[in-house]
Length: 369
Ligand code: SF4
Image 1 (cartoon, rainbow, N blue to C red):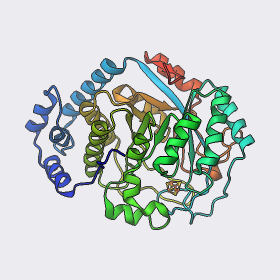
Image 2: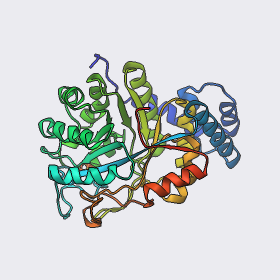
Image 3: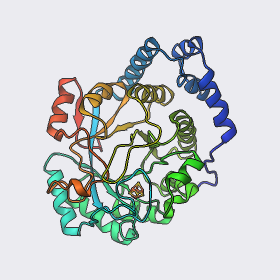
Image 4: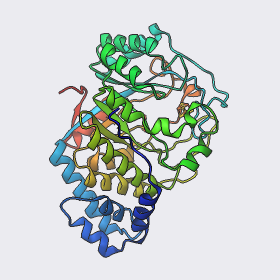
């Protein structure tokens, strides 16, 4: 790593949080007329005083900036779950070790069959996902799997698995052409993090927090961060996320960082999160982040409903999953009992692409152009 690492800062976050909670309608109007936003301006846009007229203006500006920087292209990707075993006990996740769920690890042949089924739908960008288990994240096992995915025809392969050491990321990047890493902090609130992660190695808050830096130091070109919407006070997490992303973009400019917006969904054996985020606040968060980070890619998953996705995609998103299954082997056969969480938008990739074209967007199935 480059010697400098991101730290949460309670005092600064509290100051920005106070600004968010106390900003007036006049403060918001002033920020909406500004050319470039500061962190203070971003906090202002999180204010409870934001009314419908402000939100409309914020959404219009966010959509305008997104078209200006990204045009009408929207990249499509698909997650492939290869192992639902997990040693952690995250309270909000169907894969947690205490949940009585059938556990499946795809063999290399099964994974290849799943990948081929996905490839035939047109995708060339793949996200490999697994619970935290020594075998699912061992680079000796993972590197050949990633190479297999390239052989099947995927041009871009990313992972969303347990945090690894910098040397392991380097191995995956240099030996298997790993293109991307997605790692969400879940929440930046240490006390709530400890409460929501009662067992397993994921309890190590700081190790997880430094993961994007280890990935970037290892040379991984694309790194996605985010927090789990519905776990903590979304305003505090939004402020910490903005600080975190600013830090990463400043210190690890060789990698491209993106933001995802996973919102907690129910799953077999687990309830939703303790602090639900409304659709209105989801939209406001997306648009405020777009104003602060005009050139940062933003991803939307199938956790959201078709109606909601259709409405928010034009406002700021650049990457989209489609046709997802969150169960290992879920593309060859429907296996809802193995799923991590409920997929809400269950349209086929072809239907999502057709919807995008109808709205004037250009669905991109490949990530390298
Ligand atoms: S969120 Fe990840 S680490 Fe936690 S239980 Fe689920 S799969 Fe395991």
